[in-house]
Amino acid sequence: MVFRTHNFVGFFTLLFAALLGWPVLTVMLSWLQADHASLQILKEMAHTVLPDYLGTTLLLCVLVSLGVISMGTVSAAAVTLFDFPGRRTLEWALLLPLAMPAYVVAYAYTDFLQFSGPLQSAIRASLQLDGRVFPEVRNLGGAACVFTLALYPYVYLLARTALSERANHLMEAARLLGASMPRRILRVALPLARPAIAAGSALALMETLADFGVSSYFGIQTFTAGIYKAWLVMDNRVAAAQLATCLLLIVWMVMGLEQSAQARMRFSSTRADRHGTESLPHRLHGLPALIAGLLCVLPVLFGFVFPVVFMLRALMLGGAWSDLPWSRFGHWAMASLSLGLVTAFFAVLSALLLASQARLHPGWVSRQVLRLVGMGYAVPGAVIVVGLLLPVGWLQATWPQSGIGFWLTATVLGLIWAYLVRFVAVALQSIQSGYTRLSPSLDDSARMLGVSGLHLLARVHWPMLRKPAAAAALLVLVDVMKELPATLVLRPFNTDTLAVMAYQLARDERLGEAALPSLALVLVGLLPVILLSRTLRRP
Image (cartoon, rainbow, N blue to C red; front, side, top):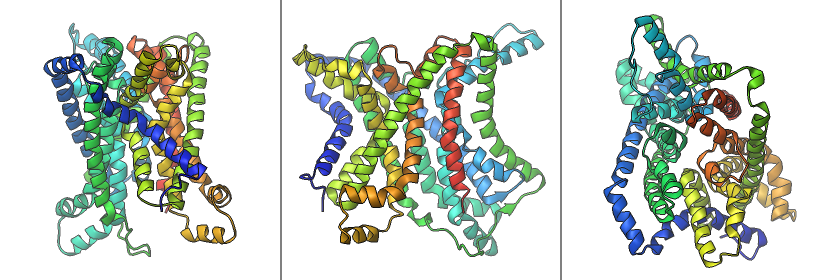
């Protein structure tokens, strides 16, 4: 059975899904507008900037994947397979870098490690040196380190979940068969977590491809930075669309890797025996315990503690507390919060309608609609911006007096639309997770009592979906407040958010003022991390 399009709710659901898929479809269809001039531009790009964009983006992805796999896998294996002092605290502390936007980590380390920063200044003063002590941090290697520190929790979280399911149980069986500890780790534990590691690294790569703040601040020529340059600097929407298409193809390949890895994670989805026969982690003492603790403490220090300390230092040295832009900070915070709340409301409402329709009317159409909507989270903000603004240019050229561009670029309508395209998938995942806990017999019982349609959603489903809906609203709120690329281009005049102002102030080398909105974003980002850590600690 498919969506009933004669039903108003079903028709609205299909229409909304089409609106969410419009930006991606528009970018793909931009090639139909190709003419001699646009093909000439593409040819020039292929000989000039395109190889640089492609090479830089691919090299950055390789470095980030190596970094997050190494850091996330080692930390997950340490806290899952071994027991050492501080392990219980480090289990949730390793999630803290999820609260740090990558561009905030970039600002913090740049301020501390640059030529005029406190570290190099202290070393030059103590050793009486004149030149640079460390190489410039704003380069491809520095960006890869920033992304690794900010994104390794994706690999850590999935690998830890996979290992905690059955790793200790199987490693105990391998020990009884005479296998040494290194052999147990390499031949039992890591193969068990390999699909989870691949899925986590794919998520980290999608975040890397979608980034604009770090690449722009470090001056790295990635596809995302190139899209904005082509649109805003070169004023060439065709070139921007073509670059967006190339980036979209890379994202789809990474999505294929992630979906393939998720499909292979089925074998580790069942917990070991819950009745006391599950083996405990191997207890470490002395030097091995110290090494395991350091391997887990260092990611937390470099990924969360040090950036927060560096930003607090910049905030304190940026001027007296009374001289800080508190009134403007209030406007930035209110703009971010209001946009986040409005988007969270519509995202949860849309996710409820989509998930309920898929539950009540399962079929091929339902699966394709959910797949189309779910793809939005993997689409970079730069692609969404191009997909929204490209039709605006076509419509303005056809009907100059329509004023269609005003509604998408001078109001919050276009901005909320872009947010929904990207973040409805976050709410949908939480709502679908809640639906898996509802037995289909509840729907059958409700229908026998004469309850169906929206009444079934309101009176039967909603009371049991309140907690997943609240978690979905929180996740969307935080994602919207940290989102930078779409906000930077689509925000109305005189509407600045915390993310935009943190980027602009840091770009102007005003780190003392940029620290205030940056730390506010970190504080907001801690909310879902606390929620996630509490969920993981439940038996």
